[in-house]
Length: 239
Image 1 (cartoon, rainbow, N blue to C red):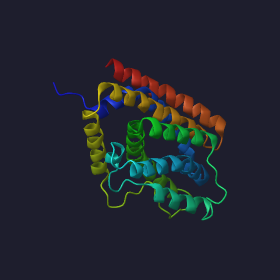
Image 2 (cartoon, rainbow, N blue to C red):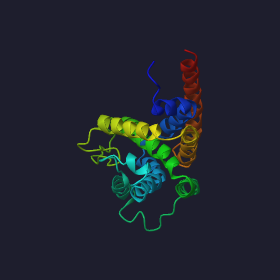
Image 3 (cartoon, helix red, strand yellow):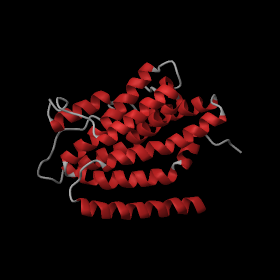
Image 4 (cartoon, rainbow, N blue to C red):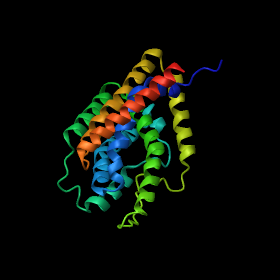
């Protein structure tokens, strides 16, 4: 029997919280298809997180963290380009991260100081998510804009990886993650599994801080999608 890869173990361990996280993202950002201010807020809450992780990959380039630095996946400049378009070129002048983002950043800094290997959970899950779910959102926004009066011609930079092959980058990231796991002891790997769950908990907190149109309807949609997601989780667990 083929041994289960570590990335598959991570995915299985986070299946339930991941389903809920996806439900929140899909419900909240559904409004972003027609409201660029909501989309911009979504960019804003994740901008600091991706920037921190990319700077950490440079600071820790000679460690396991640096091994996940796949060419072409860096997003900091892309976030800044999009934020300048949606919020104006001086968006950063009076900008201060919101409380949920500050909490997230403090946790990342604490990990870097005490147990930097745990940062690989954040890099792996966030970039895999952006390269997968981000592409779905990109396509939906393009299609939706064709049916609105605005006919927006600007193409979001954060979900545009240019000529880089997304399937290849995802494969490289998975290979790097599994390679790291091969040299870690069982205790460290188990900590990574648990930290993976925290990734989605913290993601959910900053996603909830994004203001969306008609929050009453939004909450009903979130509840419905979460219920559906949990049913799917139970189904795949049993069968």
